[in-house]
Image (cartoon, rainbow, N blue to C red; front, side, top):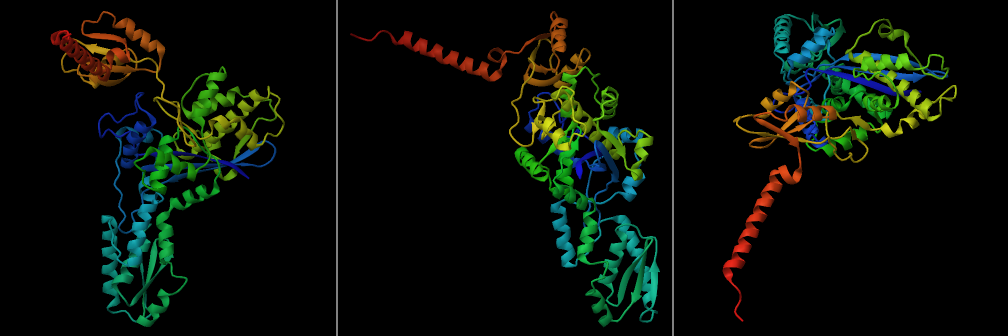
Length: 509
């Protein structure tokens, strides 16, 4: 029985620079981060999705089938999706050998429910239109060839159109059938379509045939593409495992389910219905680093290697993970940032982490054949807790309320004699020492937030005698503009009350 499915995704970009200040910040609440990330997800697309299915065979042995899917938005008929490319993300993927030809030419199509409804409506209406300029050129050439041929052709004569790829096989047939009532079409495979001249009666019989390759249901199935597999994963209700998976979940929702809702709570609710059990290995390993004397690493490959080197090799109960014979490429060569390989790493990290936690909970006396349900038991506190990068909470709870935001002490920077200073300039000023996120408080005051106490102490020390920037610990009663405004109003009211009392004089006896 399949224990779980691990997945990973690659995108054409991560954080949109439009609008400004859209990057993640320590100041972000989960709602603020969601709204920022939503804008990015709507602008970028998925280039690759990796899926690793972990099946327990016998004893403690897990066999992995790992798959790497190149994806490209569906362009069939009227469907034409706009997306943005981030130069840094493209450069990053290129460095790790990403094949852009496969992405552009062979990417599997996909649609979400809203796109499918629009496409289905046009398909049922019989009003076939083509958005792609490339496909229009191919169609024009095909129509010209058929038009020239059919004038002299006899009934039952045939011709073959060649060099058709992907959706063009469907589109050429649909357009020819719509334009010419005395032809019938049939795919021959290998990018070829046969065109046959037929009588009107014969055409009507063929249109009602169960074997017609252009039935609307088949066209819809083809347009869904990878969405069919997504829907299979949803129906399976297996634990879904990822690493730093918030952006992945947002893209899953937006690209294969429905456009991301404006409401953060609606997004959480939808994901929990789709995938009732989520496990983020980043959340799990962050906790393990606190409990175990392991080197603290961040990348998924480094985490995998640390766990492999630190688990007891003589432990007979330790999970043995092997790649299936038809997926052996990842056993021979590391392929970091290839989605299928990262999905394999992610699932492996989960099993190794769970075994480590099980050993600690039972004082190393683990039975010879621990079940996956035992692993889920020791992982219980991490289920549906998705890692939250650089923010006010450590994780997002997809099955309940999020924890309250908690920060280290805020610093406030008071600017004197340095007019026109903005958040970016303040950030660059302090970035020379350590990383702080910056938010404007008032015209000449800025808030600084760090996730390290040592950075706070250092800045307070280094800027103690700065001629233009006075740095101190933020006190709400002292620095908050709203509190200051309230104090000023209260002071004015108190002053007027005093004046009224003094000027009003003593009452007559």
